Image (cartoon, rainbow, N blue to C red):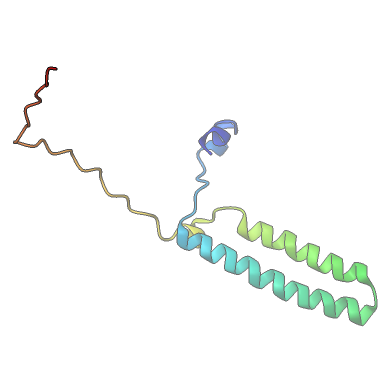
Length: 105
């Protein structure tokens, strides 16, 4: 992912592209709800007007709207709960060093 960010222009490289796990859950749920509602509305519009194209345009418009909401990693929606990583523990040196003995044949 960092290689792709390095290919972007300098001003865009400063933008964060990561979302947290809770943000992923919110993004997926939002996506599911909006597209389900759009599918129902699209079906009703298409049924009422007897035009399949109206139903398709309704669903495609909702898909574009959903993409505008979901794809950017908005800090107020998808980055509220950052992961706090633990600092790595220093390896402890053992006081009892075993002597390595070689057996000769």
